[in-house]
Length: 398
Image 1: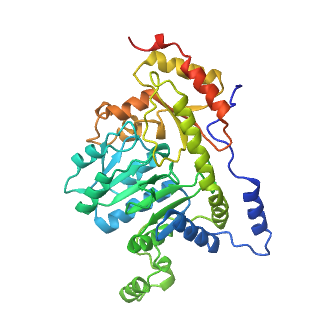
Image 2 (image 1 turned 120 degrees about the vertical axis):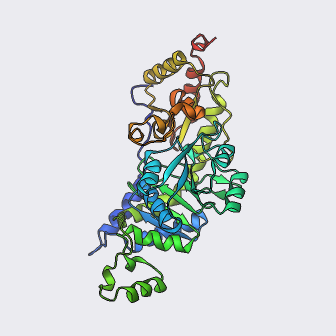
């Protein structure tokens, strides 16, 4: 393989997507800000996911932010349990909304929050558990779902890297109080930039619609809500009543059109991505690399490469080999690894040290992800596995 012959991502905006977009733009007066096409995508996405409601936004990060703002509005402030292996926007959204993040370690086989450790961290001040389904793996367990339901603690699912993955036959993102998706360029499907909040809760759905558009009451679909504010504020123009201080996080019709087009191929592409992951894990030497990930129901975002044992020498050999073969990679897995090592958290008190989460810290130092996409062929995967397996075991610790 030559330099950059295996990139992290390849363009998944296809000609058919662009043709639909061009056809729309050729209309005499095409609407560009969010409108009917966004609404159609929201409805189509909800049916695909298996939920009642969805609200499209301009990014997955915006989905995180508005979900946490809505949690604050409906449940008040307190603690939110989070993983340290996640994207920065998950933690930032918790902090922006005034919650205190409580960091919990991961299960090394699912790369998601460890159920036992989550349950041990629950307190009367826990307002939600914010779980991240990392790189397409399912982080849910029946025990976690049952206990949170019993205690009435909302579950928020970050499914930005796991479109189409399942738990017990249901798609991830359909089991929590709220779920957040990203349609960024590199993900399973893309609207270039874009995100979604999905839920079965009509109150949350209505609130997210308002928060998406500056907190304006006119975005509510509830006549009762609109009338309540009209009665309380007769001196205000009904079109400009701001019930909540919020942001403009609206998408465009262009995003909606691309989403509708891409969703048609998502299931087929996911099957190929999963086949690629299984081929990769089956081809690796389990004495050198972790191959026992919990793959049932997975919908792989990127190939997962984690050392079986800690060794800086072996890690360096692996990275040198990947460089030589032109394989782009990211050390630390999702979000650059252990968020407790990031500078943005240093200003906050009561943040634990990174070593306090040993499973997260291990993949921070000794894990990578490699690009996975439907066009990747088995021969290329097999060749890389053979190369990785040939790295001298002498590099491993005695």
